Image 1 (cartoon, rainbow, N blue to C red):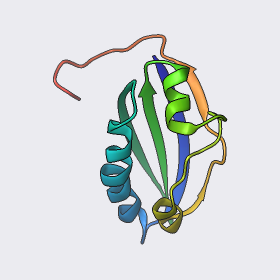
Image 2 (image 1 turned 180 degrees about the vertical axis):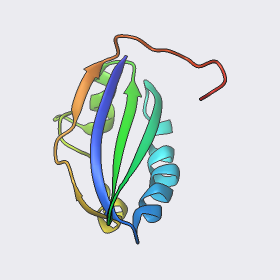
Image 3 (image 1 turned 180 degrees about the horizontal axis):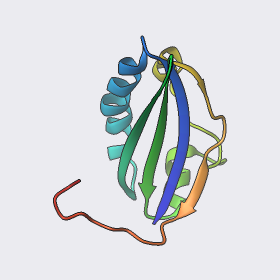
Image 4 (image 1 turned 90 degrees about the vertical axis):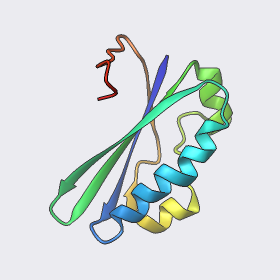
Length: 107
């Protein structure tokens, strides 16, 4: 399994807009991608900014390319996300999942 990691920053005023976008539009898009295995959106409040870290999971790099296109290292940042964020990573990182621990109760 491949973990795709990306970060974006929002002001406190627009952070909830980004979270809602992720839970609706991003989730809907990802559900249609073959090999999509789940996602997590992490939030860290840092003074006046909120840093989001998105970790999406795919079965293979081929499945990542189905989502990201020919350059899988390029960030996919939709227009709605660009409106909510103040800045974002232009590149993402990909990691092979070495261990996958399930808490058993969804936590």
